[in-house]
Image (cartoon, rainbow, N blue to C red; front, side, top):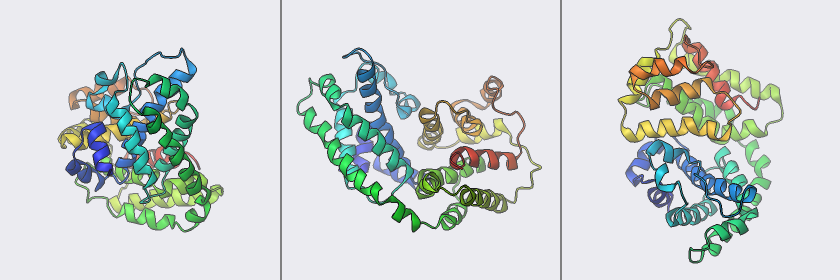
Length: 314
């Protein structure tokens, strides 16, 4: 089963829409798969940590963005169980990337495998669900083998070339420039560059690459630090985008918070708010978010967003 079929089944996104999104957002398929696996993982953890058999709402970012949360508030239905099976099968054959997304999926799958007994009890009404959950064991073993060789693979990565490749996309994605900056930084953070940042032990090397990245973005945009962002205009431009693109931006920005709740994301929260609210509402909502500055230059924006997405491990 292809990733298109998995995403179509679990999220209602067509193959054409998936292809359209991945042209800009390289790792959105992996993020959706991660969201799917994490949704099952949240229930498994709840079952393990609280009264057995108790059902809670599932923390699924795309569902909240797409309005599908209500459909799953009482249980993960059979389609999602099938989606988990499909996700694992896809991951087993997935060799396009070795990314930060793969690493997170492996961690969640590992935890799911450890608690599969509780999942089996929860899904006892579904035929052959034990077989489906046990597929996690195969993925767990496969992932362990892949990450045993991670250092050798990462040595082959030319981080600076990846930066140059992504920065070259700026001004060519047909998105608001603030969103284009977010998009290329998200591609770097979610891919092999982000994995390199995670595993590189030399802080000086990481700082040099982050500094180089910020400089290349500013040079590409010829930012002089004099122009301030217009939050209402940003929201207007985002709201004029196609619905599927708008949902993708909201999903990706909110997903960072779903995995790092203890952090305060100034710029990522700004993007999420702009994608969620109408232009007239943006300023009022931002006034309630004390961590978001009212005035911000593009220099500030590039520096802060780069630090949020790829600089936290430096």
